Amino acid sequence: MSTTFGNTPTISTDVYGTNFVFREIGKKGGVPVVLLHHLTAVLEDWDPRVVDGLAAKHHVIAFDNRGVGGSGGSAPKTVEEMAQDAVAFIGSLGFGKVDLFGFSLGGFVAQVIAQRQPGLVRKIILAGTGPAGGEGIANVGPVLQDAFGKAGATNKHPKHFLFFTQTSNGQAAADDFLRRLKERTKDLDAPVRDETVQAQLAAIQAWGQGDATKLGTVQHPVLVVNGDYDVMVPSFNSFELARRLPNAQLSIFPDAGHGGIFQYHAAFVEQALAFLEQ
Image (cartoon, rainbow, N blue to C red; front, side, top):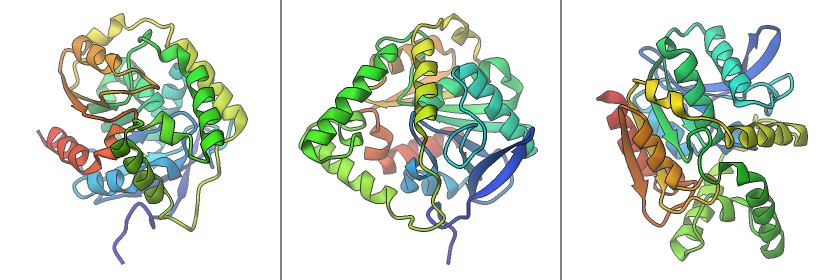
């Protein structure tokens, strides 16, 4: 049986005395792609079509940062500390150069790593994310609360409202995405803890009030991706990232929200592979 993200084992590494869990897939060698995930996410929240698609050509590593899912410790309350922990995790695996793929909160973390450890990074993919101080980012708490309220009232998953548009296409894509997330049935990650979510919300709140002036120093090639109607990190922020980053290209998917890369997973994987191989 070929290895997929759905059946690759969950393993761990010691990061300065704290256990970090991760999964890896794809042929080892070359520059690995390290995935940095979103608010409330654990390993089970990565779309297997995206991970398997990238792993067809690259060594891909998804991990839980400090205090997330099955990893030990307590989640930090700043993006900068999350970036520091991610760099320590990468170091524990012995990598001197990586590509970063940051989605949402993970995109904030990727930006900090690129600024603070530029030599560690080759290329960056930023999806559904935005710069420090970006428009509407600090409003994530009320947005999340509203989505959970709507989900409870309609017997739907919050991601129906947070990640996808409310059109028939968007909601069908949400259903498909949520089905894919349930394909793995064994060796599941631990669910996110409430204290972790609160720490992440605090970090996002602070990021939304931050300063993006140093983004102009990031010389790495960057692929910026989003849907055209993102309610979590408003899509304007993707345009702002592409404007501020000196070496960026921008891809916006139509009738798509925060989870545009999942709705258009085949097209996104094709774009990402082309970008990584340029």
